[in-house]
Amino acid sequence: LNGARNTGVRLSRGRYIAFLDDDDQYLVNHLSVLANYLKEKGYPIAAVRTGMYIQVTEKQWTKPPLLQVKHQHPVRALWETPVNLLSFVFHRDIFHRYTFAEDFILAEDFHFLIRVFLTFPFHQLDTYTVYYYTHEDRRSNRYYQPEQLANKIAALRTSWEQNKQELQAYIPAAGLEQ
Image 1 (cartoon, rainbow, N blue to C red):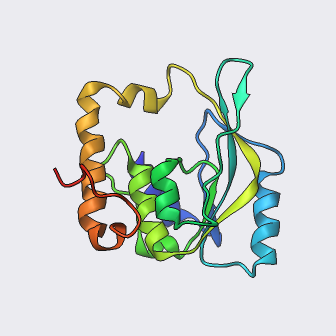
Image 2: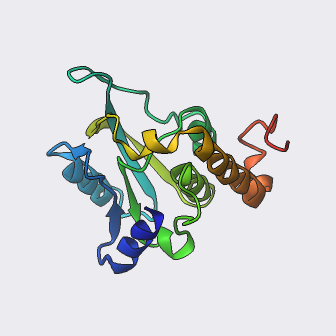
């Protein structure tokens, strides 16, 4: 997956890059909400996110909390409320500095976002514009098997080791250095 993401970024031509899985859906206003915001803000080199509805049952959806960044750093918000890339748009310059770690199959979104949030501005919009569908065949469901958890731990450990100095200000270190 991360190799495909990196290839897509490399081949893209737009100023901003977004990701959509084949089993999820943008609401019809998702891209226009983001485009209007970016234009209003002067097209910042930043990561921008809307909220995401998550399927609970076939007919029931929930609105998880937005990343609360008004009173805390985005890294701390991500630590407390992990999210995926589905409702983000990233300025392409971010990918000149960071790509997706191709050796991680779990926590790759977290690993990427930690690095981005430590370096670039983050904007959380107060609107929900994406549907995240849950089902048994989801890639993340298959990967959350016991044999795959070692890979997730490795991704988290790598994020910590590569960014320890900066992360200590935002994330409690208890248990991360073991």
